[in-house]
Length: 151
Image (cartoon, rainbow, N blue to C red; front, side, top):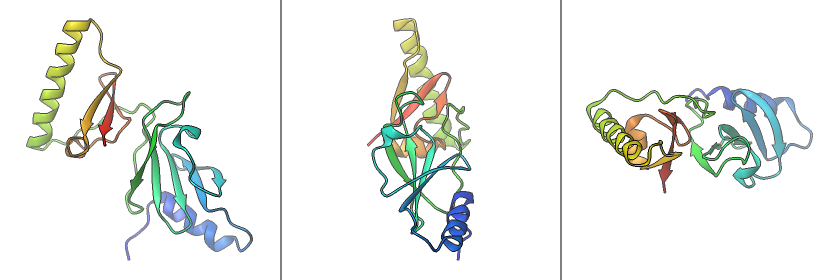
């Protein structure tokens, strides 16, 4: 059996310790417990980077949006891998050849956009396979630009 990530361990502890009425979904901000709910609900109710965990162990992370207006959606994540914070963290790209090629194109696009408009865009939308090749998650920031995923 695989070892659960930090949030999964916390849920397992809660499930073992509580024999009373349990809620269906637990919310964590990074590694700290925040709230419980009967259902997952709309993502706009939580900040980006919030992790939601059901008692069965399924985990979702709130992506996109901002802390003021809330997240724009939920992305399913593995319960066996710790997820980095999405609160404006700088992206730590992978260094494989495909990633370097995508990053060069992204840099070229940002330079072109800034030359034309005089400012950088608020966000850039990439395909999900491009984002995963880069080693980034939706909502992370690169050079002041939020990376989003096209679904």
